[in-house]
Amino acid sequence: MTERADCFVCRKHRGEEPVPGGPIYEDGLVYASHKAPPLDGRAYLGWCFVEPRRHAPGLADLTDAEAQAIGWLVARLSRALKAELNAEQVYAFVIGDRVPHLHVHLIPRHLDAPREYWGLRVDEWPEAPKGDEAEIAALVARLRTRIQDEGLRKE
Ligand SMILES: [Zn+2]
Image (cartoon, rainbow, N blue to C red):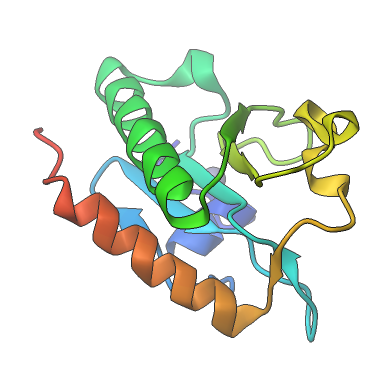
């Protein structure tokens, strides 16, 4: 259960799927990236994923070390998203009904998002800031710097 040829997340970690701006953070246990926009399109700005490197299906399958690393990165990246995007809130969702490799969705709620779009509908707000590949890559570079500036994870 280390990695799977047919798994989208494993493929992404191996560099076989497009990742705008490259990984935000990666080490031996965890990996973070921004959602890729559709071809010639734009993606909700700040929608990120935090994943274990290992092909672990869900939260219940993590080792203690992976769980600590995921928690560490979720906190770091949430802080970076709030600071870079002036977000009021950062949501964390784990659903996993389609891709059986744990991915924590981190989705900032942008300033002034109407209350009807709070929570699970946050990405449906038509006025939400979106980014093309270049804009996302620029954000990724800033998020990466913020995470690194706080210091490396202790193994
Ligand atoms: Zn996988």
